[in-house]
Length: 318
Length: 232
Image 1 (cartoon, chains in turn blue, orange):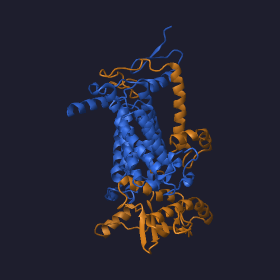
Image 2: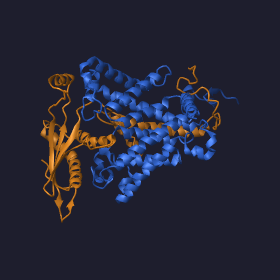
Image 3: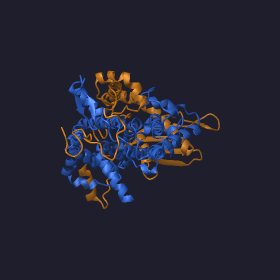
Image 4: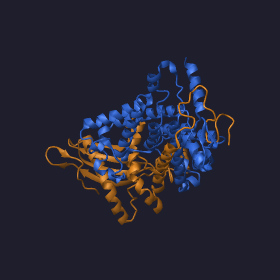
């Protein structure tokens, strides 16, 4: 029996007996996709997590030791115990704890390089979660976003191109032309939807605040000396500019989940994301957080653009 | 809806680039696999969406009940976030000011975080989160006495642990800790400061909330940490 067919990127999906919603669902989640964007996200995320893991090591026992800034038996005050697990809860000696910290760092580096990628990504994710759950007094948005990114890296074929795994499997001459796959699409879609959830709730939370409505929230951020790394207090003389940037940020964040999908508005949504997060990174000293958010936004850049970019880069470097 | 440049309305490439081969079958996964994967996707997305719904107040009873069966999954993958970045309002910054009296009689005074010493910047931010998260638990001094008493049950164990870490680091006998809420200037304050002085550094009135003085419990020659202490 012939089935009606739904056109997809790489072929067709049978739509027999399925309504439009089911076909759309299947098309959204199960169309094979080029894994290149996921590989680029893997590299950036692995680098950021490696850096974060290294910084944890600088004050390691204070963060993860039995006493430290927050003793293990007090984590329930900030966590949802017993569900927020950590391998540091079970690590009895400083040597074991340090070994686990270094394991996380090495796994993050291996993830970035694409070496034993799936295993490395799972270990790196476990290390990230363990660190965040053991030291809830010291985590912030960066850890939330790295967790989101690492889930997609661990789920999808993130090491299928631009990786040592690919080089080892196919030889140096094979290039990075990994084939499209459903799991690559699935991982990217999970990241895209998750990012929309992040922006949506972040925007909704801001709607509760008077300073976002009166247009002065930006001032509250850049006048805060504890955050400030770039002195922009000269903006005090330009309240209308502060209003405009504050309101633009608010509208962009609240609308992100809608404007990121249409091809017409997507470049604006991504461009604004890059501007906002670079601004936060430079002016408030949270460059790692900014880069993590920009990395997540890369999931919305079509693979064709990334492929043109990597091919041009390869030509330039040859 | 179709797009002219190789991607459709949802960003899917309309054509797979010629230079890459297709390894999956054109039809993708079989229907049964898609069904199982769809269920997993829905459950995962509930695990993503429910925490910010049930997260920082205000939150509905519905969201708080709906999240209960997802708590193990949310905890497993570290999904329990509210994502309320700089919300509802960017507020004043906080720091912990401490003074440690050492065993040799010396005094060490400092701040958490310390922008001059906490390098790289990510380490500064990790330490900066300590006063920021404490500040969310410590009510202002003019709050009703009962609220301050109840809140103290939450923040005192955390401050005691921080005091223990400070005593360990500085070989101290007692540690006094204040929470400092740094004054957030208005644009008018800042302009006035710039007009008033050369350099125009704004010096506001910070709010200082004493959190207590904590002492090492000496059982033998070795101090036992974190100390007991006598919070104010």
